[in-house]
Image (cartoon, rainbow, N blue to C red; front, side, top):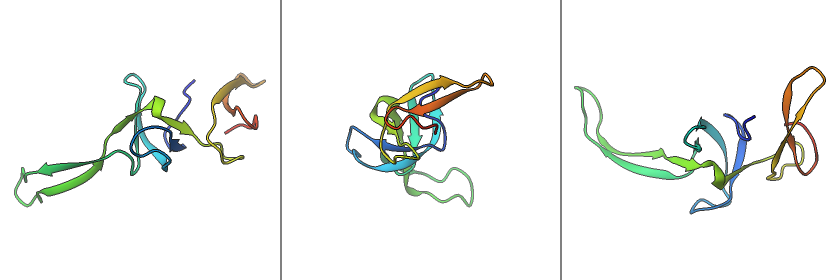
Length: 103
């Protein structure tokens, strides 16, 4: 069971963007990295490759390690660790470790 999924609201707990709250855009579980909206911004200088394409300085997100982010519980609105629980129907769900609610 994944601790963080696409679309989750997270908080950055380490690095230069510490304290920022944002949402997950993309996850690479094999590399243990995530792409987070407006976090770990980098600058790329690009040349136009095709006719009509615009070159210039582009700002975009870079990947951040999963160990540097923590999910935010929807019910208690705090950063929390994630537990998992098996429901009666056989479905596995994620639980907030603080308030024990499903998120």
